[in-house]
Amino acid sequence: MRIDIITCLPKLLDSFFAHSILKRAIDKHLVEVIVHDLRDYSINKHRQVDDYAFGGGAGMVLMVEPIHKCITALKSERTYDTIIYTTPDGELFDQKKANRLSLMQNIMILCGHYKGVDERVREHLITDEISIGNYVLSGGELAAAVISDAVIRLIPGVLSDESSALSDSFQDDLLAPPVYTRPAEYNGWKVPQILLSGNTKEIEQWQLQQSIERTKMRRPGLLKD
Image (cartoon, rainbow, N blue to C red; front, side, top):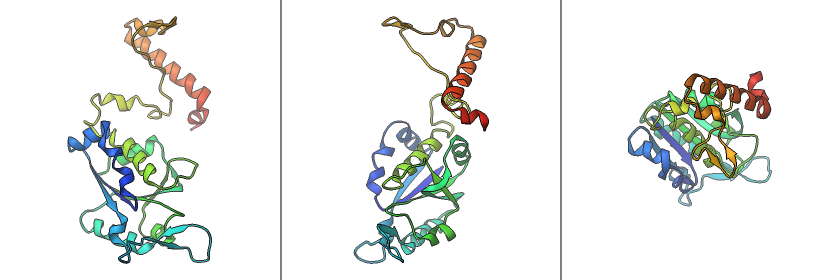
């Protein structure tokens, strides 16, 4: 898989892909993540990529020309399965969306910034708009990082135990059950005895029941879905 991220602040993403699971995935050549500086496609020597909005109003808007030039250049090199724009009013990102994206070969993500992008970008260049939550960030870089993390960890070979991703919360519209590790008792707090029994069938039944109960209590809307 290849993920191309377009941003006017590329250094914000440097650290995110330089550690832990994502770094190992990149080092193992399971995924390639390329961050593109939108200012490399600016309209003038001042590396300008934003301007005031027609009609007035506070805040700057990312211009259509630099974005169009960047996307066109990338598309001339390969075919993209999706071109995503990160925006608060996009489709809410969830595990099902991450699963679908993990099956794709080439993904492009455009990070929104300031007051957003010229609407013509959304009308003519974007194929998918995604929000990671009902709140506003200073820019779409964090959203791009969240999307990338959720997708990359699903690629076969990224996690040392591939079954781990299948048991994550939301994979079956349930929250994950509680988990414990050694010691079996600490400060008088004990691990449920069923988990120490070695009876795989009964443990799995207990875990499923715990998932259902936890989902009912904390996220009942998932059960309705």
